[in-house]
Image (cartoon, rainbow, N blue to C red; front, side, top):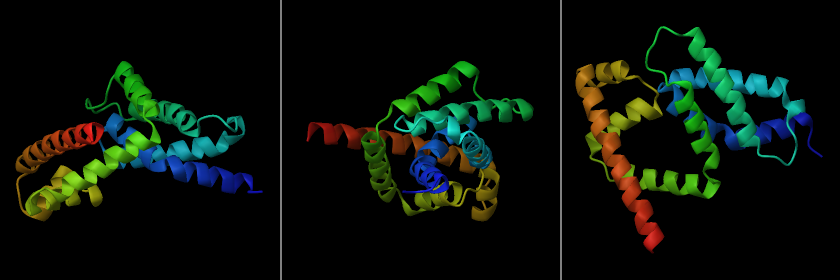
Length: 174
């Protein structure tokens, strides 16, 4: 029988990526999302005795993450890039409503769509998201203006979204 620590680590490990994605969508910044994810993990561990075995661990973690996000935003009030409470509630509800199969299908479609990008676009995506560089760091690394990087990323994200939607709709037809 696994220990309490092992049980928590297994459950958290299984939901960590999905939770991180939800936090990035709420905070719009991967560094902030990592900070909030770390604090959420600490809070979850401290309150793990409140979790009811057999219930949805991700939903429980998402609720904790929502409150940690609110605390974080209140602390860093200087930025106007954060969502209002209603929008955050909707993002959490949307994230909790997706099945693991749906998320996996979207991830698979994303991976396929990324392989279809031009090499320069793939390199830009890799710098920004795989290596976690902000638009400023990416621009510096690629010797481009920050505005150019932001415009390119916007165009690439729109292209990827269209590709993902097309791929998923083709899978439903097949």
